[in-house]
Image (cartoon, rainbow, N blue to C red; front, side, top):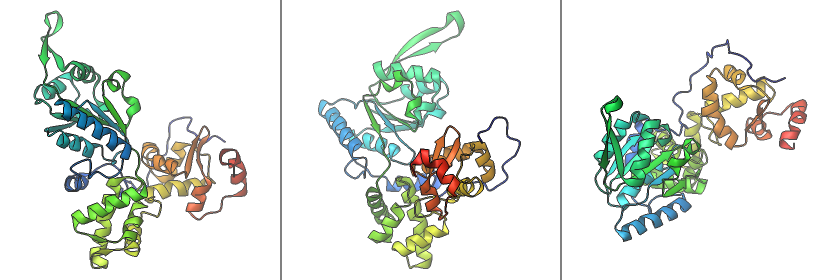
Length: 361
């Protein structure tokens, strides 16, 4: 049976709302304040992203040698991997000021014109979530990036006049989590494009040790490894977990963090050994226990969890798929053998046979 939705849902989710997840890669107010103190100041101090760092270092050193502004830079990747940090490092390496804004904040071409016209020569303009910028502003940005000029329209109708406005040379750093949504004319105007990868556990351990020093937290190698293994390959999550473990250690263990303390603290905060939290386990639990491992439609699964389908699809599923615990198929969502093993459940025999073509087991 195909469990995918064929009409509007009539059941309203009534379960818990997972709106404050410890493993959410997006930054909240506390993260923003703490990250400002933890951000590395130069490329040498930046941990991870070896290829991007090496390539970007060449771009910046060549620009400084020429006495010119750096090429426009596009950084893509999941939230929390260091795109904003790299933009600030670019400004620091070029000894230039930085202006920070975001795509959703620029809804009209006039908004962008006002920002561009106030830039200083060599200034770095960081445009976060650049794919969410309005189309009129996007088209104005084409000319600004290529010719350092914008046409400001004065008046309306037949009497409207385009006044060219020369801009000082500047460097645009665009950041996006959805590089595929950028139109080709915009992507082609970036001189350097870097894709940010998820971090390996060893790299996250280095991030955690560095953050612990800055936060004046005592942590051993095994404690850092325990936190790193639950951080979903994301430095922002690693730093957030470190702060929560620090709180636990200050109350329960005189401030020192080892493997046992880290594991006990994260058990309190319901983050398991693979980095899954309550929402992730709720999705897997419903898929396995209620639907025998699937296939099941997204809307049906969301109702079973008590969440909106967008929350399940956009918040929980990407990590579960990346971890190999869940698969999206034409017939619906299907649990993998790894999901059964992770929750300590035994798959039904018919479930294994039904999944043999998908997983070879």
